[in-house]
Image 1 (cartoon, rainbow, N blue to C red):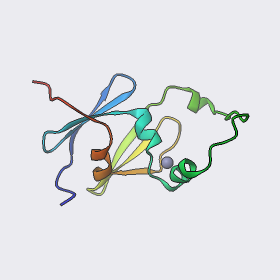
Image 2 (tube, rainbow, N blue to C red; image 1 turned 180 degrees about the vertical axis):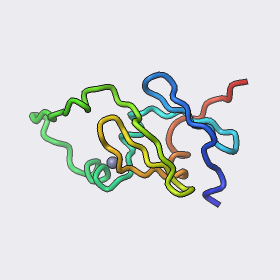
Image 3 (cartoon, rainbow, N blue to C red; image 1 turned 30 degrees about the vertical axis):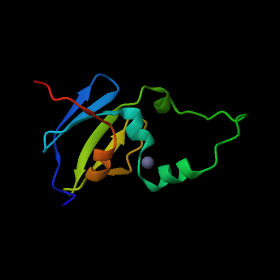
Image 4 (spheres, helix red, strand yellow; image 1 turned 120 degrees about the vertical axis):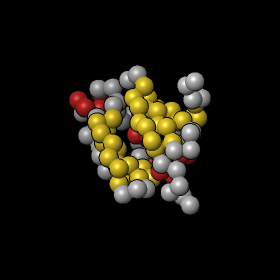
Length: 111
Ligand SMILES: [Zn+2]
């Protein structure tokens, strides 16, 4: 069953990382950038699949995008996913628990 494990604890680690403790004892550390770049919403998927922009074109960044990335909020969606709102104003990504288990890196539990 894919919904057998679920996060029991969400912790911020420094400015750029999130640590999730799972119900089976697994702890995983996620960089906020990784989460943002893995955003599974349709808009971001489309962007990732688009051909790279011309190297002569500079992206125009908004003020929010220039700020260091942070998580503005995480909200459970049913019992299978989290909606993650990022500080750059993007909040349409629904991260399923299965997907979150694949991202990040396993870290040792504190003893
Ligand atoms: Zn997205």
